[in-house]
Image: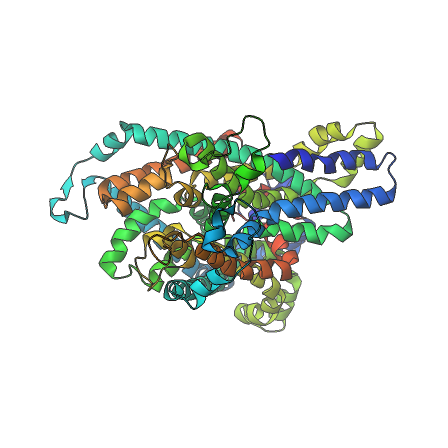
Length: 298
Length: 341
């Protein structure tokens, strides 16, 4: 890992900072560290971006950059032969991930509110179960679900993926939201109840507006998880009816059987990565807060 | 993050020192009154609250239980049969024979070995890298802090399959350039096909896994770092402790819980590794792992009975790791996590 030695410098710099170094050097040091980290984090993205601009003939040029950047791969997946394959996968991915996220966030909001604010028997069981679910190996569910879904007619349908996605998104949503809800001033809800509001009204009118930022953050994290799924995607779908992007990428073939799909896959990968990068750039603060306050898994 | 666990005695056994001012006030003000109410024989208010609690928590709970536990029972049941989808009529009860088949098969043991190897190496490297990243995020000057956190979230958000393709194309003999970049290294064969033998293929697989998941571990560790009292470290510095001593004597012991939780969750996650291997080698050249074996047996060869048995074994192994971690290392799952104060 070449970066581990490079990244050690921050710590050394940090150690000596107090001793002698001028402030300006520290600033420069931090920028160097930041750039090293940025290169490490962005390099694979840059690499696949660069590959996506290579024509089939240039793929083997052995260099990072394309010789003559071209949009042929983007044309191939957006207007060319692979159009149907990619656009249907994109439609499936967006639809399924958004619906799974919405359901998970709504249910988790109610559940986390109850956990954070109410006393009821079995609260411990809810938390324990969600912890167990989040640790569960996804692949262990694939065989029984594959079999059950075929019997129930859910195989290769949107609901056939949305339901298992809830097992991925619900636990982390519950934990994250419960953590968020603990930060909300409890007295406000009580005040509302003293003023005659029922617990449900207090929840809707007082807590929901306060909790909205936490709910939003949880939605982003849940969306990332559903968007990222691959195991369910390849196991529980067989056609363009429900196959999401990650699974479609794995089954992409070239325009002809003699043509490598490398360029087309790279272009598709870039298109599905753009929304993630945008979300990260816009909501960096919220995502970090959400992941560090109640996150269980990514 | 003491808030959630304070209400959950057995998940977080000793919440005493962990109580935040908020939680303490909660108990003093809100809960205190509730306790008085509860002391009275089942007041209508308590009952209404319990009912509302279950109305709110119930749907999520029921879905989680249904989506996980029903299929698990189904898998346990199916694993006792010789059952192929290609010949459904020949379904036959064979007891534990599927398990015997698995446990005596070298393929299973080699997949288990590779899975364990990947888990141990990636978690170890990620822990070190993640800690360095967490330190950087924790200490970074204001002007770079936002940038560091933003770029760190990029690998976290990217689809694992996309990350796998990115690294695969970099190293691939057809479309890669890494061989050219490394050609100056003495003794390096620039015709090396990274994906034609186990060792080099596993190297790239682990590289991409580490790139993709280090941000997550670093965010958990960042939460742990935030818990370490700043004045403790300063006091140690005044007493003449150097940076290394402060790290080992003050910082790390104070964030032990966060480290344990990060390791446990990453280890469980790494144990389920699937996507990268499916993309890069599809299990060829000795890179087969348990998840892939289970997938190929049931979805690929439609051997539901045998595949279910592998799924059950994998599930038991994950449970075992969690149990060892929780009992053996005394991980306080609920209390140690996050730790925002």
